[in-house]
Image (cartoon, rainbow, N blue to C red; front, top):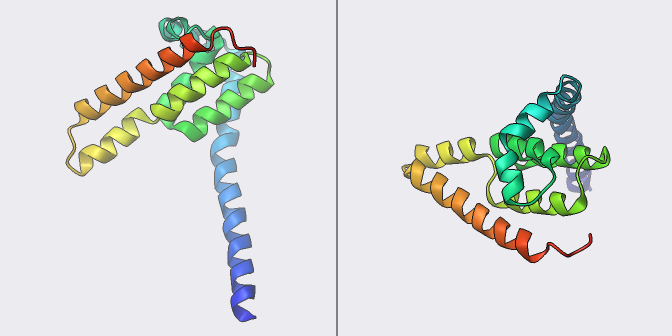
Length: 149
């Protein structure tokens, strides 16, 4: 019985700690996103990634979640992508395309540096990840042009 009680207590505490940690990360990011939207920074970021969004034939507004996912990782990128979708700024097809790209190629700097720290060659990892993600996402974006989500 003590084992079950300890398990429940530790599980509950662990769950609330995880939720708190996620909130500490996601809430400021969402606040930043709202401020960036008001200051038109999203347009600037989207403009910088416009060649990428045009290449994948996604909404121009998908540039910001793409940038966040590439820099900060898939969790942050997904959070921004969901918020962008909830705000009606990105269509479901673009969401799928960006999600595929980020699933294959996220947290570029962090992941690459982690592998370099254990002896890998950074430029090879970076190049292969970007090329593989680009090729697969491009193929999917061309195959599902006519699909209505």
